[in-house]
Every structure is written in C-alpha cells, then in structure tokens.
Image (tube, rainbow, N blue to C red; front, side, top):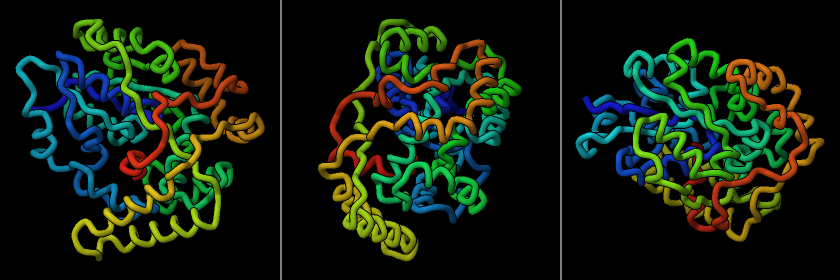
Length: 327
C-alpha cells in the first residue's frame, strides 16, 4: 500500500500551502503533487450541495482509495510520504478515519491567531467573488445558518479557529509524540528554525530546507457595484455548472476571478473593535488550547501590533485566480 507517513492537517489559512511546498523540496520527503487530496473528509463521494463554489470544489476530492494511493506511487525508495489537507484537523470524522487507516501517522498542525485566520478566510472568499457579504462581522454572524444549511467547512470562519476542541479530540486518538503543533507566526518569522523542528519530528535530516516559498498575498477588493455584479455572475455560473458542458463553467469563473482581483489592494488589517466582536466566542477555546499544549496563547486575546502577516509578499494578480476557490 502507498499511504502517507505524515500529514499536514490544518488549519486553513495558516500557512499549509507554503509548508507543503517547502517540504516538497526536502530530499528525504515526497509530498503528493495534489496538495489537498481531501481523501479522509468523506467515506465515499463528497456531497452534491453546499455554499457558493462548494460543489465545484467537491469535484476535486480524491475519495477513491486506489486514486489516493496513486498519489504516492512515484516516490523514490526510502522517502517519507506526506500530504496536506488543512481541514483534517477541524473535521473530527476525518481524524477518526486517519486513526483507523494509518494509526502510526505523524501529524503536523499549524495554528494561527483565530481572528486573523477567520478574517483571512473571509477575505479569500470575498476576493474570489463567492462570499456575498462584504462585511467581515456580518459574514461571521451568518455562520450558524450556513452550517445548518450544509455549507462546507471553509465557510465556518470562527469554528475553524477553535483549535483547543480539535486538538483535545485528536489527542484522544493519537499519542502526543505523533502530533507537532506549530505557530503560524513562527513559520513566518523563523522559517529555518521551524523547518528544522519539523525535520526532527519526522526523523529526516535537518538543514535541508531553510525557507518558505513566496505565496500570493490575499487580495481584498473594495465593495463596489462592479464587484457585486461580477460576484453574482460568478456564483450563478457555478450554481449552473453541473449542467454546463465540459470545463466551461470553470474557465469562465476563472476569468471573472481575475477581473475581481485585478489591481486589488492586499488584505486590510482588522481594528481592535472588530477583534473584540469576535474574541468572546473564542476565549474559552484559547484557554483550553493553553491547557492542552502548555503553551501561552494570551497574545491572541490582545490587540495586534501588526496585521495578518502573509507568508511571502507577491502582489495579488492573475495567479491569485487559481487560489480563489474554497480550500
């Protein structure tokens, strides 16, 4: 069987794409060419309904066992096999499926200030034309309704950042020595140190990789009549996508995304007032995270001295379009 030895399991918008790309350059590791196979998210075919763009994203799931194993068959002898699907941490059923199939797997968890993570998540979907609400706080207020309606995990802006609950469940399935928790800020500020820590955790040579690849900064288009019109068109095309021939819907929506993100500013920082509106729903979980890990996360409850901190500095542009669909 060709199954992974380790997985990067979360969280979304916490540097998993950059880490996957960095680990793919390590000579002792083999990362799946498909960065997010999503294999453990379902027991069979993914759902056929959800929020804007969800059905198109579900079609990308690699859910058949033989297709999943095929992702790793080209690995050189002796290489450790890995993949990265940032929703595995949040999805408790996915955690159980991983434990049942590969109980010896090593798991890498990236955690990011949950308010910043949620805001980056919302900005990602807003810039892609899929988020219909142009105000972060109002979009967060819709979360319960969207969860009930079956929208996919990427719309669960606040819930995705409740790492305490997620890790508490994970530690009930895997011994702690198989789980490594990394702070997103450390990956940005001290990539060589963090990559060496991960290499030690995986049992491969240190110093083989020392930096994180540059990634696109999340575009943040301003609210406008044009943005609203293009976004409605994009969502309408995606809703009808299953009835359209071939890749027509994907090609058209990709062009619309490029237009939405052209010349857009980068993600705008949150105000302290905005952070205070979200933090009460996260404070208890942050305290749980501190208890579980023994680490101090009190800075997440304070005003931010600087915003977000995207990995890399490449301006948003045409390349951003391919990253616009829910991840």
